[in-house]
Picture 1: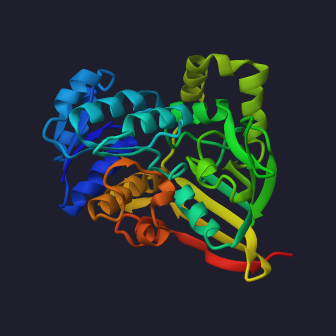
Picture 2: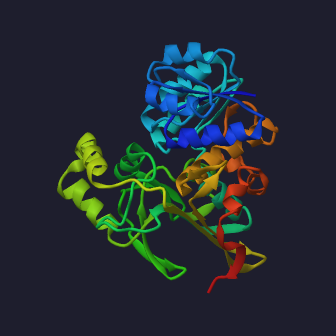
Length: 369
């Protein structure tokens, strides 16, 4: 299968290495950053310099490929998806942006090719888990989805390091968030809904952020009383971000905020990804709760060091591409994350990267108090 991968950043590099390692995919990486492409070329990965913001140039470059994987920032998703449709190739991306996903759904209408956005960690894997848990109940009361991409060794006041797209990070902190309350879909504000919990002796906080639910609000509409997604951070992070975004009004100056964070907050590859999903409902006449938790740490993959966020994000989109190639997923139109069977995902060679983690608790049943 011939794959065009657009985006030569850290996640794109990880995807390229994972796919190449299998020998089942012929991967060419597109980007306009010559230096990033040179780094990949030096590792034996074919590249092509293409302007990712030019839909026509991208359409022409896609001739002869079977599928396009988009690892670019969220604001380029619609442009890249439009080029994929014009070129007649299947499309997969990692976007967390709600508006971009709605636009891609329209692009996918009546298409003979597949369009599958949100193929990363959150949205992505987290939605696959939540939907699987929800299906186990005759009546679903509550589904809570919590994900954190965190430094393993926090040292600054934010207790945070840059581990993934800074554009995506700012976007999820600034955009309205979908949720279901009392059976009705609602919009809630980012950085609100603060809660605290502990796991394995470590204290965390969680709060609303945008995009993590993917299309679950629509899929579970009328089937669940309460559904929400929150990002997990170490205590104190949310208060400082709220000060920057609201009190200093940096939410209206995203370029300034991005420059500030890049200047002051170091990146790290020593990170940990926390996945924590709970579902509560009625089963066999009893009120029950199912829980799914994982901790994934940075480690060497394919002979190269990868951060936890690289492993989980790249691993997820590669697993879904694999499942698509094997015919497990629909072969045309818009594909939701919750159409991916959790069992098939975890059994996949890339999905097993989640199983190779420190397992806090496999899916287990707890009787609700």
